[in-house]
Every structure is written in C-alpha cells, then in structure tokens.
Length: 319
Ligand code: CIZ
Ligand code: SF4
Image 1 (tube, rainbow, N blue to C red):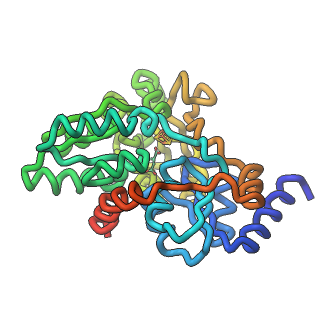
Image 2: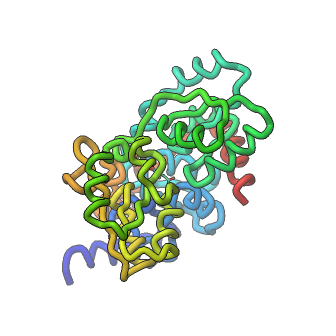
Image 3: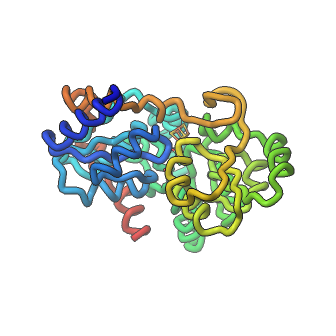
C-alpha cells in the first residue's frame, strides 16, 4: 500500500486510541475532509464546526482549520482536549485585529454594540457583545438594526460593507481583510463570465465589492455549497477558497465548477485561491499531533468566560 494510505490508517487508529474526533473546515485539503467524514467527524463551516464540537462525545477534538476555530472549540468545550495540526495556522483577519487596539477602539465608542466576526482571537471575542459567522451575519445585524442599535463591526471590511449595504445598519467598520478573498479580480471575473454565459457566479462576502456586485448568489461556504446542488445552472464560477471544491463535487458531481480568477499573495496558483494558513493542515502533522498531543489549545479562564457570552448568543440566535 502507498505511503498516504498507510498514513491514513495510522491516523484512523490513533483517533480511536485517543478517543478523538476530527472536524475539518471546507478550505482544508481533500485528504483531511475525506478522513473527517470517513471517521464520523465532520466537514463544516465555522458555525457548524462550533456546533459540532458541542455535540460530539469524544474526549479530544482535533480541529483542522485555523487557530480561531480551535479556540472557539475550546471556549465551548473547556472539559475537552482541543488539538490542532498546527497552532501557527492563523488568519489575516485575526492578525489584523490586535486585542489592545480593538479594545481602545471600542472604548472610544461606548454607545455602540460590538459585533465581531468569528475569525478573531479569544481576547477580541471577550470584548464583543456578539460573535457572528458569514452564514448569520445578515440576520444578526438586521435584528440589531431593528432595535436601533449602532454597531461596531470587525474585522472584515468587505463583509462589513456588504452587510451594511444589505441592511442599511449604522456600522463603524474595522479595516481588515482576508488575503484570499481580497485577491479575486473583478475585470478578470467579467472575462470569465463572458466565456461561460450559463454559469451562475457564487461569491463569498469577504470578497471586494466589485466582485460581490457580479454575483448571482452571495453566501457563506455552506450556502455556496447548497447553491451548487440547488440552482439549475450547469456551470458555476466560484469566488472562495479552492478547498471548497471537494464538497461541491461531492454534492453535485455533474456540474462544472470554475474557480474565479485571482492573482497575487494568498493564491498558490494564478487561477486558484487557497488560504496559506488552512494549507498548513496536512496528514503528516495531523498524525504527529495525535501521537504527541502537543499543539493543544489553551485559553486563559477569565478570557474564556467572557468570550463564551457572545459565542453563546450567536449559537442561540441561529438555532
Ligand atoms: O474564510 C473563512 O475563514 C470562512 C469562510 C470561515 C467560515 O467557515 O465561516
Ligand atoms: Fe482567514 Fe481568509 Fe484564511 Fe479564512 S481564508 S482563514 S478569512 S485568511
């Protein structure tokens, strides 16, 4: 048997031996997504990952994704051991929103309700009133706007601006961006659309306005995956991380999937977007962390307690 198959067998055995469950984000490598499903773990977006962690019985959760996803799992499940293949897998949104600067910003606008995207550190969440993911950002902001609340939104300016345009809410936006989605290019997308007139354009709202404006559907990862199986178009142009194609091919094997064009940093090739931090998760370091137990998420209990409040609010709202 080839090396990869042997590695996967060792991982399956270790998952059993360690009473561990694997949860992988849609943007991770195909091998990891496959393994998560095969071993009764879960492939999911960040909201579903958070929910899944609270329902599984396993003593150890192995989170294949980026740091904030491991932290959220630990905040919700302090009694569980939470491991990640690579703790250094961060996110440009998280890095672009340091807790001290963010706290000062919030303190300067005390009459604002603080809403932060899930892609933030535990410390930033601890300063927030609400946490949201892209799949529920719109309904949460609509709900707050209907009560006349003024909102601080952090860190993704593109998603924030999209939500602001859709809801008309009074929002102060932090100036952060996702290095992957920011690279989608609107002129290049127009060209690809002309070549594929029957294609529906699916866009993640972390993308720039000019790309969002060309979308037939704007949505979170799970909403984009649903669209591929539910919309009747034979072809789809997809503006989000290329990791998503594994699940899209699984749910709609006969549809043609075309990556939206990118260029520059954050892209591993000219025509496909892939998050460099998601890409740090691999079969090799997954096996290592299961053997050694290092790369364990630890969170200061006082921070954890405060960060739990806005995360719980999100989960209760979305139920
Ligand atoms: O870009 C990300 O990190 C996303 C889409 C996270 C998620 O699943 O909400
Ligand atoms: Fe962060 Fe973008 Fe990577 Fe998601 S794809 S983890 S938002 S850098």
